[in-house]
Length: 393
Image 1 (spheres, rainbow, N blue to C red):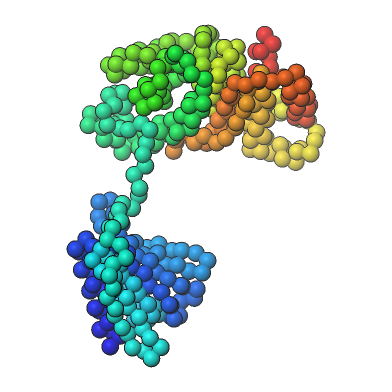
Image 2 (spheres, rainbow, N blue to C red):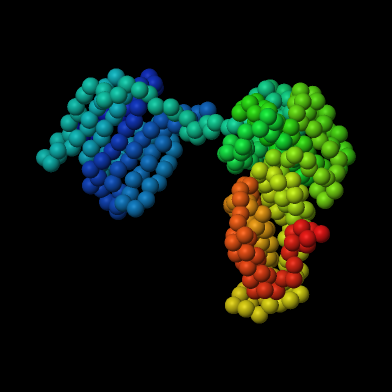
């Protein structure tokens, strides 16, 4: 009797799946031997363009998800109903079906009007809306991110995600900037220009903000390549110039960006932004050598001595101290700072991103900041942070 009702229930489930009327299925009132198992929930999913059924095993303290083809799912659900679950509910767009085993051991099927006729989206991974779409972007094809039809190359998936991750981070920062006739952006050390192109595209074509974006790069071959791509893409407000961070003089700059500038080159970029009184400064430093050398040379005796005697801990401490003092110096000049993790791509280590938004500071604020900087330098045995030196010069 029970086997026949289970077979009828599973047949209705299979027919709804084949006929595309299936909404969901659940099993409950578990009386089997598996400890802490409470329910099983079943839904249709799409994995690599193949329809499957996702079964979520709900335990007391955890969930386990397993995906099956329809025939496998039928066998699993049949076995679970036979060996433990006394309640099953099938939901379809045409009807609902309730399977119940009563206390006397009799199994009953009850057909009910549907609670919903809406078929859920079967997509396993929700398509994320990206600020930079891949289609209709000649620069992405020229940079070997996509083919001519806008399909992202398999080996460029990480770079494409990085581009959109970067725009996701910087877009709210730019949104809050004062309105100007033209937003002037300088990207120091722009390299091959992946992020520079994406930012200009976002400003011009997504938020429609008139902008002049300049990429600064010391390698002439990359400057020539990027200018050609910008011209071919009809990006009239985007250009690349040959130069170094140290030598380039930004004029009337609203936003200054320097990602992965090595060691003190980050300080040179911060100096340019501070002197230009940029509304927004964004840096992602790397290679924190200058402060580490000072800490190694001085070997200050303090409560952290047991840590910094190990090279790997010393390196990490030097990174935090370097960037912490950078943030304090920005605050001295009236910037509100945020420091957070920026993952550039799968092949580059995690970086810290320092963001400074132009504000105001009082004499009292500056006095307090100078005190904090002095105390930090004394504690870690630092004579001078490079950014202090270039600001004084």
